[in-house]
Length: 250
Length: 322
Picture 1 (cartoon, rainbow over the protein chains, first blue to last red):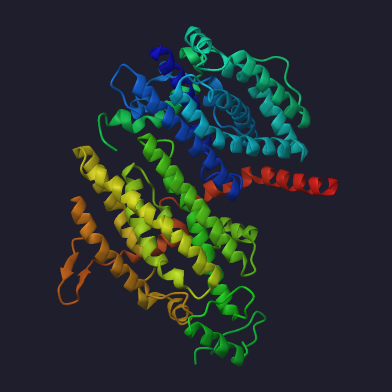
Picture 2 (picture 1 turned 45 degrees about the vertical axis):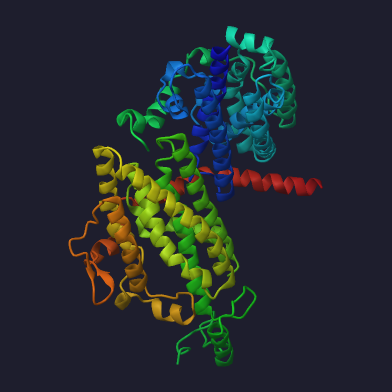
């Protein structure tokens, strides 16, 4: 059981960390000052969630590892995030829509995880939910603002949707270990969660007057450690100091 | 007479009676507020100084932002992100405070991007190693605190009040920088070298942050009279050196100045001459990163244009629909 829990904690932690890492790239480069600050806030919150999740994963791990070891010393094939969160940040429309997809997922997930039979996960969910609700309000507002304003912004949102849409089902992918956790009510039923998510997303995209694309590459594999080319570069950057100067205190 | 030569916005002389009353308020340590009468030169001096300060916060995001994706631990990454975010926040307060003097943020941004307005030259130096995050926090934020604590008592109310809040955060920034240096200085030989190299890089540019020597400072006397400034550049620089030398000793690091030594008679450290030619070159735009920093700001501004436009159009549509 602990192995399955560790696996799932890493799935969530890696998702939060990679999403945070991409959003953090905007710090100092946002479209205007208030939004620079808001994006950094989101990155910070997600990083905080990642830290709590890695700490818990380290706690249940059979190996003697720290949260930092898990974040900074695993290679691409050990990362479990969906490919969506490792995609390069793109333009502000891409960042915004991607963040909305993740925020909508996080809100539904953490709401459900509050009822987890595994107390540490329920505790983390309770804390994270307050923050991801705020993130969702922000990214939803921006989706509307960009889609229903100028032609240029709308086109960028449509292009972002065309690029991102088929990466989203992977958020709900499961495997034997996750199925086991679902059966034990440690994590919620992912297909039910997917339905709820789809309903919310359809509603917003409809309001935004955006068209969902009909075909594209259906992303899969993150949970099994199968990633895009992008993750290797992200980790090379993120893990540089720990790799170049092994075993140091920082 | 202090008022001689002061001109109003139209180029005529400032009314003598108003000037006297204004100076009296300042001498009595009253705060000047946005709606109060003030000499045009006071307004201009504040706009110049405050917008430079705000620009420094914004451009100052870049050298540290350089290490956000590469910070070595989750904790360090959180601290660094929070710190760079604080800087954006400081920029925002100060821009807002400056707007009370009758200039828009758009205009200030234009001045920054066109190179008309200056920002602190320290941010035109590169941050090639992680230890630079430590050195910046310790020395650059340390120097900023020396400059900024007296500004909490500046005569212009909105500036003084924004500085009170900013100084609280800056002191946290300085502590986290010193903490990074402490860990590195006690770490492996490679880490210690990293820390020493960063100190070598940052020391002289940090001393330059206090501005030209008093004998060459063209804005000082009037600013002191108006209580925008409380101490001279050289006084503050000396205070900084005196406070910092023992900290470097505590770290076991060497300040890169062979002339640095305690002067018993003065009760201060003597230190070597700053390379003023380098200082002038960096201010002119010929520092190692001037072009890079302004280009990064310009790029963010250009790429954000459609977003700002979209937000504006959306707001207008909402208002029209209401």
